[in-house]
Length: 267
Ligand SMILES: C[S@@+](CC[C@H](N)C(=O)[O-])C[C@H]1O[C@@H](n2cnc3c(N)ncnc32)[C@H](O)[C@@H]1O
Image 1 (cartoon, rainbow, N blue to C red):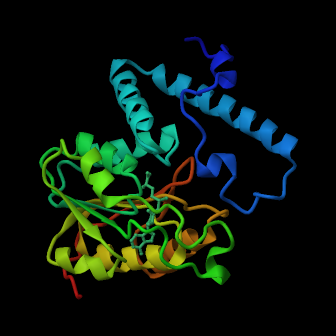
Image 2: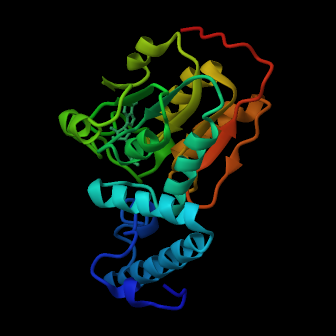
């Protein structure tokens, strides 16, 4: 479909529906913009999203098939990543296949991003951590008002059912990092953090950073001004570490663990 076609922008179901951040519904904007302004933003956001996908598609068959897969996953689950972010996650899993180590995700919700990981992880074990009762604790000073306690509650059984076709997938229900004990001897090639708030992000970094294999990737959602807790946790944690935080287009950041430091889990 040519780039200039605008029909999907106004269709009932856009090719890639807007996510929490692209709508601004979950953020501080909520309640502050008028209804008309909000609707205009939504239409414009859909238009931009559609243009982005159209451009990404225009890069050969391999991309086309990955994007189709991501679209299918979005249709089957309530994936909270936009198209570019889903693509980045897919590529991070794919590109770490030569790095020894397991994969972990903290912040599973209904299993949308976990499903992307499953599609491309191969035999690597995948450890999935979530309260399945929503965000456990918010520090309003650090997190602002973008999220609420209990937001994104989901059913563990439904997620297990959703991912039943994939092997080597393990679930840990409860508040991380307490649930991390089960994997404290593991080393990781990829960790996807999507926990929205300061304390959970800091806990994820403290736990996984020393357990990352050299070349392994920590990817996180919500590294942006509108979710200040996540950004603050990353900026503080890496202020005395050699790895740069790579800010991605969209709302993700990633860090590639440098070689040289030995795997030395402490707790
Ligand atoms: C935005 S949702 C994850 C979305 C999912 N990655 C996706 O793309 O579909 C954030 C999740 O983080 C979980 N969460 C936040 N802090 C947590 C913690 N300390 N321990 C376990 N789960 C946590 C919440 O329960 C929620 O399900």
